[in-house]
Length: 262
Length: 325
Image 1: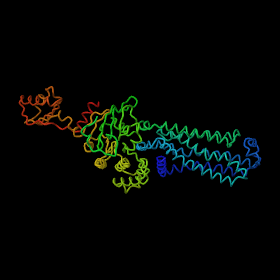
Image 2: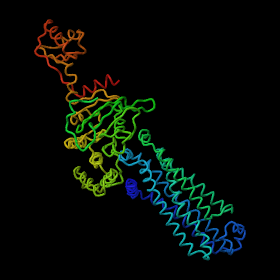
Image 3: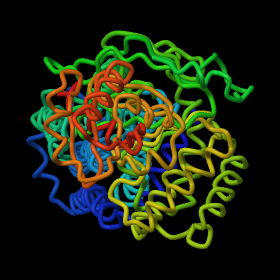
Image 4: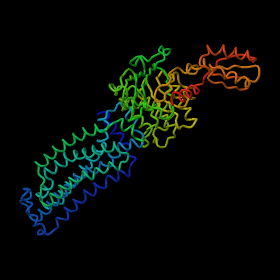
C-alpha cells in the first residue's frame, strides 16, 4: 500500500507539468455533462404529443407509468443521456494509463523503478489508481452536477426520481469505478507490451461499444435500467476487474519489458 | 572464480553472507544467443570490482541478473547473502543501482526524484527527506533542489542518479558505465564520488570499458566477454604476464639481433626498438637462459635483462582479442 501510494503521488506530481493533457481530459466530461443537462432542460418545453409514441416504453419501466406526456418525454431523455456518464470512467483515464508504462520505458525510468523493492502488483495498482482516482472523481463530480441540474430543470419530482433512480445511482457510484478499473488495467496490459501510447489508447474504442449498445437498446425500448440489472452488472464487472488484475500482473513481465525494450 | 588474497579484507558486519557477490555457473540465454556463460564470481565486501568488457559483452545482463531484474537461465548467485530468484525483494533493498542511463523523472525536481525513490526503498517520510537533503548537499545540488531535472546537465544528472542509488544506504552498489557519455570534467567528478564511496567501505560493482577508469578506481578486476576471461587484483592483472614478457637491453642497436631471437622456438614474439629487444616467451624459466646464451654466443653485448610490466590495457586486449573471439 505504501509503495502504491508513493507511486500515485509521484505520478500526480508529474501530471502537474502536463497541463495540456489535463485540460484535454476535462473536455469530454464537460461535453458529456452539458449535453444531457441542456437536452433535458429543452425537453421541458416540448409539446406533450411528440412523446406519445414512446408510451410503450412505460411497460418496461414502472417508474414512468404514472407520468404525463411532457414528464414522460423528459424522463426518458434524462434516462437515456444519464447513461452517457458511463463513458466518462472509460475515456478519462485512457490517456494517463496508456502513457504510464510506455512513458516509463521511453524516459528510461523503468529500470531504476523496477530495481527498487516495489512489487509488480503495487506498481500496477499504483499506476491504475493514478488514472482511476481522477477518472472516478471527475465522473462523480459530473454526476453530482447532473443530479443538481435535474433537481432544478425537471418538470416534476416524479421525473427527477425516474432519472436519478437508485439503479442509475448504483451505476454511477459502484459500476463506474469498476468500469474505470477494467479500462485502466486493460490499457496497462497493452501499455506494458507496446512502445507507443497510441496503441494502448485503442482499447477504449472497444470498451465503449457495450455502453453504446446499452444506450441504443434502451432507446428502442429493448431494455430498461433497473436495480436488479445493475446489481448483476456490478457483480459481473467486479469479477471482470479481478480477472483483469490477475491477467495484467501475469502479462507484466519485468524482464521482457527490460530486455526487449530499445 | 575468486581471489584468495582478498578474502581477508575488512567486511561490513551489518551485511549477510561471506561474500558481497557470489555467482556459480551464472548463465543467461536469449533465444539462440548466450549473453552470459558460466559466470563464477566471488567479490569480497568493501571491494571496488571493475567488470570490464567490450560493448555487447553481456555486462549489463550480468548486472541485471545480480540486481534481481532478470532471472538467470542457469546457475545461482547470492548478493549480500540473498539468493537471486528466491529473495529478489531483499536483494533490491540491499543494493543501489546506477543504470546505464540515469533514468530520472525530468518533470520532477531533484528533491522530488530522490524522495520518491527513498520512499520506494522503504524509508519513512522524514528519513527520505533527510537522506535526500544529505545527498543533495554532498553532491552540491542542494541549491538546485527545486529545479526540474530536465534542465540539468549530464554531469548533474549522473550525480543525482548516483545519489539515488545511495539513498537507502546499501552495502552494495552497482554502477553501470557511470562515466559513459560524460565530458572529462563530469567524468572526473563521478570518479571522485566513487572514490568517496570506496573510502566509506562500500562494495562497488563497476561496469566499464574505460580501462583508465578501472585502473584508477578498482581493487579487483574481471575481464568479461560472455564468459569471465580473468578475475584478479589490479596489481596481479598488471603482473600477470610479467614473467612472460622480458626486455633485453643491448650495448648497441637491437635490430640486427632480432632474426636470431625470432628463430628460437621458445620465443612467441619479438620486437626491436633502438637498443631494446622486447620478447614474449611461453616460459621465462626455459627461455631466458637459452635467449641469453644464444645472444652472447652470437656476439651481442647484453647490458641487462628485466621483466616487463603488462598494462591493464595490454592484458585486456590480449584476453579480449584472443580468448574472447
